[in-house]
Amino acid sequence: MTQITETMPPTVRRVRAYFAPVDRTAKQPTIFDPAQQGMFALDTPPAPWIDLGWITGFARKSGTKIEPTLAGAPAVPQMQSRSAIDATVSFQFASWGKLQMALAAGSQQMNLLKVQSGATASGSGGLAVPAVAVGSGSTATALQVGTASANFTAGETVVVDVDYTGQLGFVGSGVSGAYVKSALTDVDYIRRVSLNVARISVIANGTLTLEQPLLAGVPTSAMKVNSVAGFCDREGSTFFQEWSVLFVAEGQQGERVLWHYPRLQAMASAAESSAAGGAGFEVLRQSAAFRALPVKDPVDGESVVCFRSFVAC
Image 1: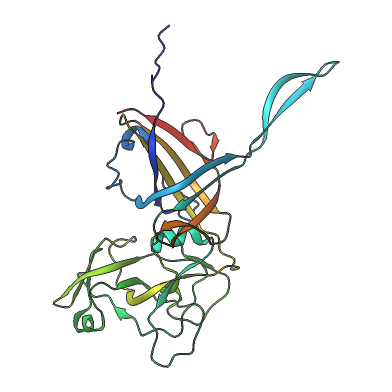
Image 2 (image 1 turned 120 degrees about the horizontal axis):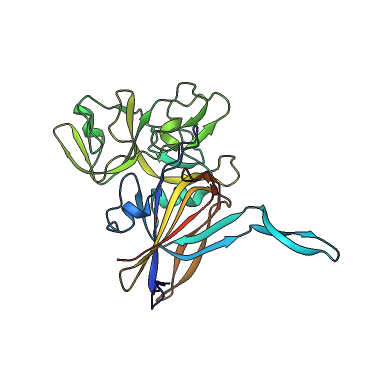
C-alpha cells in the first residue's frame, strides 16, 4: 500500500478572506472549485470573488452533535448518527472599508448619501442630493454622466443603483442589501443600502472613471448615481447579511488550506475591539461572527456547510 504523507504541517502567517454574493431569492450561493481555482493569485481572486484583505483571530467551531444508537442488554453502541448540524466562524478584519463593514454589520449596512442643504437630521442620513442618471455607453468602471460630472470630485465614493419605486423583498443590485417588508417613500432607499459602490479616480469629459469595477457590473439604463459621504450600520434592525465566503491560509512551502463556506449568515451585531497600537494609540478592529447554512453538493446530494481543502503547490 502506498501512503502519501506531507512531512511538514502548514505553517502560515495570516489568513485572507474573500467574499462573493448569494442570490437571496433563489438561495443560490457562489461556489468555489478548489481543484480548478485553489492556487489563484491572492491579489487577483477569480470572479466574482472579492478580496476583503487579511483577517486575525480566525476561529471555526463545530456544534454538530453525534449520537450513538444503542441496542442490546446492556445497551451497546451499534452505530452513530448526526442528530444536529451546526457550525460557526468568527474573526476580526485588519482593515476598514465598505465591504468589511457590510460583512461585520449583521444587518443593513447603509451608505451615507450626501444630503441637501438644510435637510432634517437623521441617524442614517437625511434627504439626499438628487441622484444623477447614468448615461448610455457606461461600463462597470466608467460612468457617463455628462455635465453632471461637475457635481462630483475625484477621490469620493459613489453608489450606483435604481430608484426605489415600491419594490418589496430583497433589494440591491449585485448583492441584496436589505429586505423590504412594506412599501417605503424614500426614492433613494435602494442606493442607501446598495453594495454597488466604488471610488472615483478620474473625472474627464463627462465621465467618472472608477478605481474598481462595480459589483453589479455594467449599469442598466435605470440606474442613477449618488455621492457617498461615509457608511453606517444600525444595531437592532431585522435584516440578516448572508454571503459566500472563502478563507485562505498559505503555508511557507506554497501549500494552502482553504475553507469555503457557501452560505454564511451573520449571527452577531456589529462589534469592535481595541488593541495597543504603540505610542499611546489603540487600534480598532471589527469583529464578525457567522453561522454556516447548508447547501447540497451535486456530487452526491449530501448536505454541506463547509468545504475544507488542502492544495499542494
